[in-house]
Image (cartoon, rainbow, N blue to C red):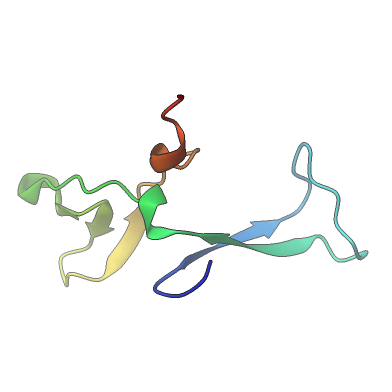
Amino acid sequence: LRDGEVFLQLVRGKVYGLEYNTKTQFALEALEPDFIPMNSDQSSRLVQGVHLNAWRKPIAYQVFLDNPQESVKT
């Protein structure tokens, strides 16, 4: 990441394929906004990949497993 916005994902406990550098099983994963789809559905309070509660506060995020910008093969 060079600049701009970023999402952080908390990674805790045992995760397949992940080796922690310390005894504390905790990490932060930086995700570019490209990982968040731009889906919107007003009936389910989904706005640009973010699920909102009745007070319009974020309660969950839709996240791609892979960056869709990098999935195009040449």
